[in-house]
Amino acid sequence: MIRKYVFGPVASRRLGVSLGVDLVRPKTCSLDCIYCEAKATTELTLERREYVPVDEVIAELDAVLRPHPELDYITFSGSGEPTLNSGIGRVAEFLKRAYPQYKLCLLTNGFCLGDPSLRREIAGIDRIVPSLDASNSEEFRIINRPAPGLEFDRFIYDLTDFCRCSKQEIFLELFIVPGVNDSDESISRFVEIIRPMQVDLVQLNTLDRPGVVDWIRPSEPSNTRRFIAALEPFVAVEAVGPFRYRSKSAGQNPSLFTEMEKRIMDLVSRRPATIDDLEVALGCRAVEFHPILDRLFKAGFLEIEKRERGTFYSAPAQR
Image 1 (cartoon, rainbow, N blue to C red):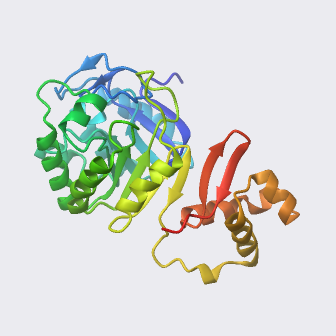
Image 2 (image 1 turned 45 degrees about the vertical axis):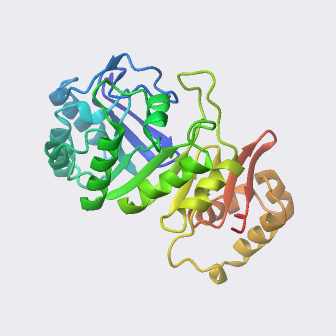
């Protein structure tokens, strides 16, 4: 079967095993973000309409899901802004009715979330992941390069209202662009913007694959930690770029570590270690402690950083 609108499943840094649904033609969006992995926007628009045939999308999803594959999420994402498709609600309703065992996620730039009709259409989606990359209008112009008619202040008002009113899980993604949105003043503005939103999690992202412009570079771990330190007092934070971090989950107690977990934490607390380092130190194969590393990371007890010699595990720095 040749697929036109459904892709994957793919292993996502944020969503586990995710089946993607693409509801627009490449590259249709209301923004032309400098970091976008889908490359430059070729159709910069604010118009909501049926960019690809929704009946064909539903038929393709039905064929892919009929064998009941193992998935963590079905995710609206892909070649542009999925909320621009006026039929997104029909697709979400079909999935919830025909395949209720699957959770749905929407990755969105958030600029349609002030539309009452869209809010009704996406009410059945389990997790909404809107983006917030700018702390003021100037950063918005540089990073997001919006379609004419989009105003930063109005966006913040609508996004805040949506997050406070929604009963869905809200993960807010903030893309760090060094030299543009990472000054002390920018971070302070982000704090003031995000605090009233009452989101479930802030995901800090940065460049991991080539973007649209050649001057953008990734945020260093020490720089990302500045955002973590500012935001974590009032919201859970996850870093999902090359440097990885997650706030400790509520109710997690370090005294409940197993013996193997204690040995791992003792090692990485002294110095960062790769999988090979841990194999030698622990005297066992990586397959035996990989699930433990995953659990410790998800609980916020480990950080992950990619370096030239490999992927290193370490204990979070004390703040």
